[in-house]
Image (cartoon, rainbow, N blue to C red; front, side, top):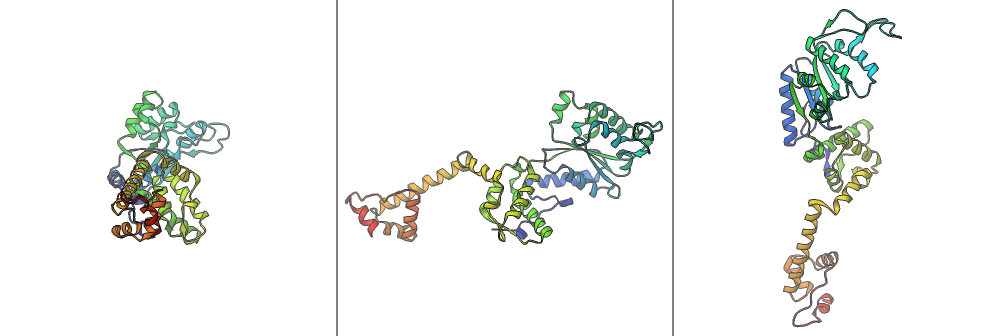
Length: 341
C-alpha cells in the first residue's frame, strides 16, 4: 500500500511536486530565474506544467506584488487576439464603443505569460516584437504609445527551432524571449515522481470531496509508474481523480484505474525489458527447482525441507511452473512415490 503521508514530501513553489534529479534541477532553474528580471521561454510537451512553472517564477520574483496575466495564444482567434494584447480605442472598429487597455498595459509591473506562443500569426509576432523592444504599446485606433514595464514569459510544446527554420516563427522574437530557457521533462522521464504526484492528487481529491481515501495499492501504483503518460502530469491527475471517483473502499485498486493505463500494462507484458526480466526470472526459478528435486531423488518432502519451504509451497510452485518432479535415476517409479509421500 502507498500511504499518502509517506509520499507528500517534496514540494517546490506553487505546488509543484517532485523529488527526482530532473525536478531538483528544475527547482534550481525556478529560483535562479526568479532572482533575475529577464524574459523566460519555457519549453515542454503538453501537460507538463509550463504555466505552473511560470507562476512559480513570478511568485518568487521581485514582481510578485504585480499581476500575473496568462493568455493562451492558441485558444483565441487572431482577430480578437490582437485587441486582447494591445487594447483598442473607442471607435477603432465596429462594436468598440469604449476604450479598453490590452494585456500589455494591464500587466504593467508584473508578468505576461504567452502560452503556446508559436501559434501567434506572423503579423502579430512582428507587432509583439516591436512592443517588447520599445517597452511601449499603441492601442488599435490609437495614436499615442503607452509605456509599460512587463516581464515576458512564453511557452510552447512545439520544436521551436524547427518552427524558425520553416519560417513560422520569427528568429528575432525568439532571441528577445529566450533570455532564460527552461526545458520541462515529460513525466515518462521522471517516473520516480509518479508516486509523489499520485499521492498529492489523491490527497487533493480527498480534501475537496470529503471522502477519505489515503492509500494506493502497490499493484495499482506499479501500473501508474509503468504507463508512459502521453498527456503528462495533466493525464496523471485525471487518472487519479477518475480512480478516486470509482473506488469503493479506502484503497485505490488497479480495477479503479482508467482503461488506457490497464491496456498499456497489457501491451508491456510481452515486450521490452520488464517482460524479458520476468521471463528470465521464471526460467531461472524453473531450473533451480528442477535441480533441487533431482538432487533429492524426486522426493518433494526432502527437497522442500532442503529449500526451507513447506511441502505444499513447493508443490504450488511446481504447479505454477508446470513442473513435475523428476524420477530418480535408480527408481523410475520414485516420482509417483515422492508425490504420494
